[in-house]
Image (cartoon, rainbow, N blue to C red; front, side, top):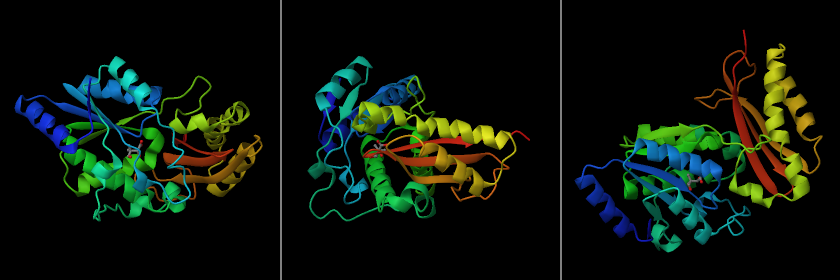
Length: 283
Ligand code: PAF
């Protein structure tokens, strides 16, 4: 596996691959890789001749006071794991390479960025859309694989690709879970053993919601109340939001009469965890 830090070197290699008619799959990440990432890498490998994984902890998608400084990093470990997965190139640019002095161009996907995490993480999706567009321009992939755990991010990227006529096909990948149901995330490493036990509250709440809906409770305000009470019965938990939204527009709904995305953000100790599920009411 080749490790490339320089944008121009990455672009030259991509040119060479394109010249040879090879198809290119891409998995953008912020590193500290886990099985969730490897599932995306395997999907990219199935669909393309060459696979590039990027590792870049993108400073502009963290709001002031968030975990940019303490975000877990271990490039040597990640390198070894990606090598094992048969990745062709690890692209890991430095912050100064991606955002040199004078940088001032940002991408905003307006409406889809407003609700859910966007309400609590100022500038987050501008940071995500901007870095992903830059990475797409550098790597020029035919396909890029994104996990559904960051559901709003996936929708923002799909919209950007459509709106800006980008030549990349976005491949969504289902959430990868630990054995007990906790969605895999690099931020799970923040959890103490006691908090880890409580972190299962998110997955359990998604299943409880589905059960309640199928027992006939369709009113979102009541579902939210029950879910908040349920989640906060686990120690160290504090709900940031529980939202029921249309799976495409991400607009809030009042009743779960159609397939609806239930999205959760919950603090477990200092770790802010998110999870989601599309709830399809049985009629
Ligand atoms: O999902 C992530 O890890 C990041 O938001 C992404 C897509 C790599 C952009 O920095």
